[in-house]
Length: 280
Length: 317
Image (cartoon, rainbow over all chains, first blue to last red; front, side, top):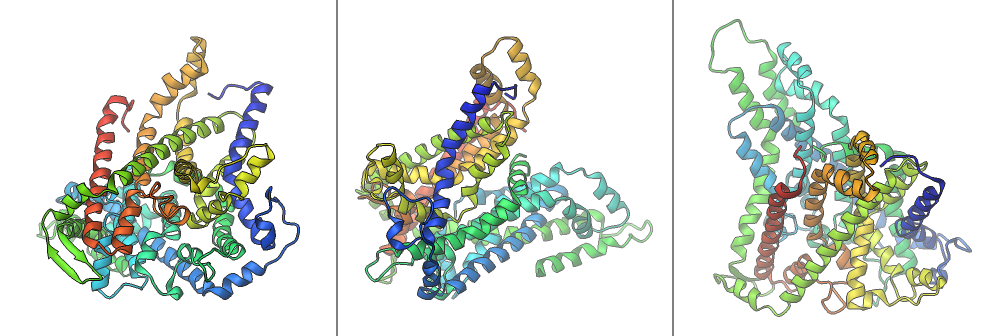
């Protein structure tokens, strides 16, 4: 499908792409620009694409009405811990399932894979009960432990396994002959070679944790412990009506840093996700 | 990081060269077994503790009348299941779930494939458009949904845009069908970039010679797409459809933020109903029963898709 295109076909293609791009770009653009608009202008009809005057009142209010900095920190540190924890757990397990022969391997792999079939929503009631019994409700532990060790990390383990299977085994065999142990072979030879897979796993693990919504609203009840998605929905006035500009400012603060990282590293993002693991 | 140091110890004995020739109990094979178990130990323990045990518990709870507020927990056998069959809300919930999933999967996969084909043309600037279409994937889900919530208001941005081309838009979140349509579109636009990227990678793996040959034979572009592209990328279509179907049954935040299951109960999908029953009405037993139903639906759909692959997936990787 990559034959040369006529000029007419090109115009048609660009036109289609531009029209299709509107719903993808307009919401983010509108969110960021509206967050600095005066409240009266947010619901201007038709919508104004560029604010007539800029005000950062919404941003100041966001930090004044909620412990927003604290909530920001919560989300960031939970996402980082979950990402590194998942990398450790899933690269070890993925490597063992791909490279080491041990008794019961296939059966154990199936047990682990079962997690792919069980959405965390299915187990939320017993998990709540278990963490309640352990005195961990209204702490960050459920949001850290379940993603690292439970169902969400299974996809990561699967991706790592597929990647290690596709990796040429000769280097590791040479290292083993030189007397390197299993862990040293994994740590010094295989892991450095698996950077693309680790990158892909980090990206989707981070985003998954950053986006988590059901678990925080089930487990957390103290505003100081809230994560960002949960905090965003709490910017309401005494009558339960949303405080438009504050909510948009907070939403922008949640979205912009990740977007900036994405734009800088877009090649690694997109190609990492497309070419590792998920393809195997 | 304690995990890593723990396993490092396991690797150490084997990093010493075995003393010459003597057969010993502590063989390389045994060491490998141990290393294997230690490597998978955290994942396996997690799977047992956070997946298998809760799955067993969810079935156990579903056989009980359990109200947290009243502090009751009694074995009631199949009562919850009987109540589920008689639940007047359930048909509507299942209809909404089916409508949402079918709409989402159909729109997501076709749009993803369409965008991937467009971006696979020899055209300048496709990398730029790829970034645009992918960008919602990295925007925080709740932020994204809140913004669409504003835009979908009667006097919001969507109707403002429609007004400029002379169309009087409806009050999207207040009508049964338009609310469902809104939830689907918001979710598709958010995540279609992921499938698009997977399709794009698959399309780039299709050898160009095949199209050359087809062109020589006089096949139209549509025929080329149907006879060459679709069969060759069918493994990716299978993978993306399984991921998208399972994902469509897990949608929660969008519904909770955008419509709270309304208007009426027109967008109350199964997960949202489960949340309402368990955590708003405190019927944990009945919530667990709905969880069992959700699990069976996910399981059945995955098995069906996996079985169907023999019929239409061109080759297995």
